[in-house]
Length: 228
Image (cartoon, rainbow, N blue to C red; front, side):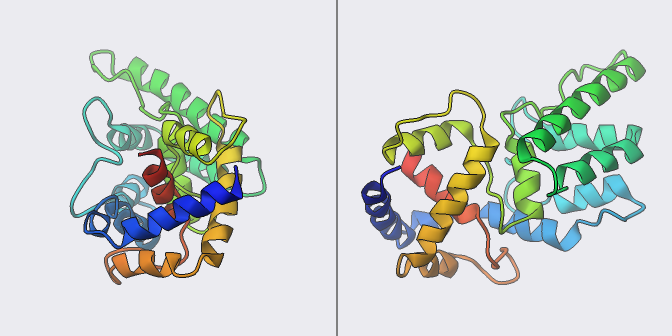
């Protein structure tokens, strides 16, 4: 990435943050991040119920439910079928002592295993997808909600487009969560130094509705803005 291009896009992004669309566009994800932080409890006895309460939003369900995409519903099915194993899956995913790529790939692999068991137990069900094989979107959502100051929501196409526009000569050919995490950390550090930028972003957030502490979601928002 080229610093000059990053700074140019920071200037454009600040102008965007002052615009009317920025006051609503993509903001619901910060509400869901706050809801997750308020409800997530690995020690709860009601494991599926806690998961359900942790993924909520007052205006949209698009992060986990849209046409031909229902990862939340299917995870609830897997949790009801195998509560202890799914709990282990999330414990492993959130274990920061292990590599990010390893945790992410294992999580999807475990989902594959449980989906086969679910299909064996429910031969008449039309469900044949757990929807977590989605280029790590849901995995990154879990990570971003669990560790707001470390991870951002991942969309592979937007990430690749942003890198290209910021002057990167090495574009990812496959999903690369490790690189994405490093890039988001770098960009966030630069945002902190960019006078007024994070302040403009914070003005969009409502206390009590959105997650207002330090969050790397602002880098995802910037990524989406740059990608267009």
